[in-house]
Amino acid sequence: MVGATPEAIVVGAGVVGASVAFHLAERGMETLVLDREGPATGSTPRSGALVRAHYPTALEADLAWESLTNYFELWGERVGGGCGFTRTGFAYLAGEDGAEALRHNVFLGKSVGVETELVGPEELKGIDPSLDTDGVTLAAYEPRGGYADPTATAVGLLDAARSLGARFEKRRVTALRTRKEKVAGVETESGPLDGRSVILAAGAWSVPLAAGVGLELPVEPARVQVALFERPYSLPTHLTIIDSTLGFYARPAAERATLVGTRDHFSHLEDPDEWNPEPDRSFPEAAAGLLGKRIPALRRTPYCSGRAGILDMTPDGRPVLGPEGPEGLYLALGWSGTGFKKAPAVGAELARWICEGNPRRAELKAYELKRFRTGDLVFGEYEPSVRTPH
Image 1 (spheres, rainbow, N blue to C red):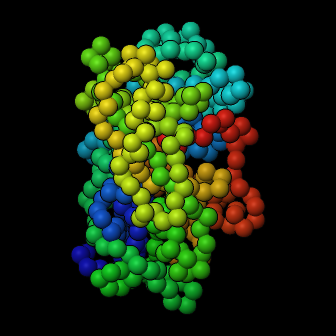
Image 2: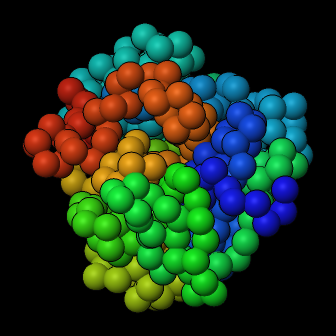
Image 3: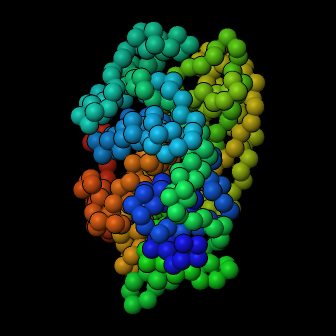
């Protein structure tokens, strides 16, 4: 009912907030989504939007694989509409120093059902002849991987939520409201709103809201950049790749373009609102140089455009999930640049956590905020030799 007091208020209409809202609405919960700018207007539209399941923990691989196979590949019937998912195949490239970690992480992926395999340089070249495999010792290949449209994905989830009765309002949330150590709703720039539960999914912008109820979030805003280059007609497509040897990632994009992000053009910020959405002047040339080394057909390719976005980084690079602080408050933030491809499955887990008291995957409780108080940070046995947000 329009105007009814919601059972849940989701703060943030990016891909994670939209996914949580969709799954809550599926469960019949009265849900209101609030965002100060609108759907998919913060970090989400600036995402690299890779869809892959190569991770250093089995839990992350499992979440990403479920998101791929149960959502991105079946979007029309599972969510409705389109998310722009394009299967290109995905490869994670490693040099000699990263080969052992790669073998281990492929084994982890296989243990939860991910369709992935180890390939050498020659086999990789056979899969994608456009690649120069110099410096590559081993690669993890996922034939079902690719990319999606980040804006279409978030908007699609939110539209699906609305079709199930959820509401969206463009409002800036200024504080969380509590009553007797329980969440009572939120304060907004246009007045208070009541709610029985609040889900903070606003990335780095969640930090001051949590601080208002006594929670210190170990989340630091960081600025990352991507560039798009025109792809010649002679190269209609190529694999989506993460290149740990050179420190960049690349994927095809619409209208004969290739999107590139790098490891080194990354900077921490004091305030997520103090950032320049335009890329640094030096970035396109640096990105083009890396791209041309790995895909020679894209050497001297024309630069189309670029953009910068804000990530919400945590000390261990893992998200902060689950209940915390005043009863009825839930956190879904701190994605450190790798949340997009896991968002559909994570939204389902958060909805179950909220409605039933526990997630389906009990291992997700290790991602609660308290790990930073106890020192039990989450790391894989073999972390990537190069951490590049993608």
